[in-house]
Image (tube, rainbow, N blue to C red):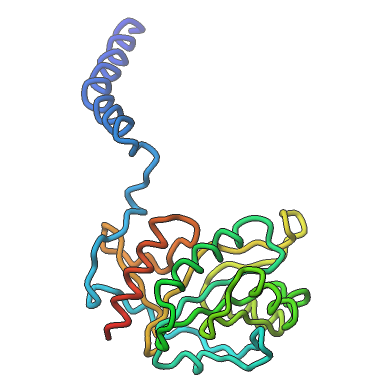
Length: 225
C-alpha cells in the first residue's frame, strides 16, 4: 500500500511540474510573481467609467491660515483628501511629496483642491501646520492643511471615509493611518476607477507610482465634467 501511495504522490508532483511550474517561471521572468491580480487597476478609463461611491462625509475644520474650511468650500471643485500628521516619520513625507506632484499638475486651476487633515491635532495647531506647509514648499491657495477636535477628526476618518486612523504608542511616531487618497468630484461624491474584475478600488494608493498615475488621470477626467 505504501508503494502505491508513493507512486500516486509522484504522479501528482509530476503533473504539477508540467502544468504549473512553467507558468510560475514565466511570471518570474516578467517580474510579475509578486503582483496581485486583485490589485490591478483598470487602465485608461473614461469619465463615465468612474464609480460614484456616495457623498463625501461633511466636515468643518480650521486650516493653516486660521480659516474655517468645510466640504462646502469645495463645492464645484474636484479635490483630493488625505489624513496625515506633521511629525510622521514614515509614510506621510512620501504621501505629501507625491501629492505635491499631483497638485503641481493642476496649479492655477480654481476648480481643483487638496485637503490634508491631521490625525494629531493636539500637536498640529494652526501655527504648526502653517510652518509645515512652508517647509514642504506649498503655497497653493487651494491646498488646506486642516486641524480641529481630535474625536471629531477620527470620526470623519474612521466612520465617515472608512480610512483607518488611530493613536498607537507602540508604532513609530505614535499614530497610524492608511496611505490612501480619496478623490471627490465637483458635486461632492467620492469617485474611483475599477480594478480588472470590475470592482471599485474605493481609494488611491498614495505611496505607489501606479496610484499617483491613476488619480492624476482621473482628476483630469473629473475636471472635464
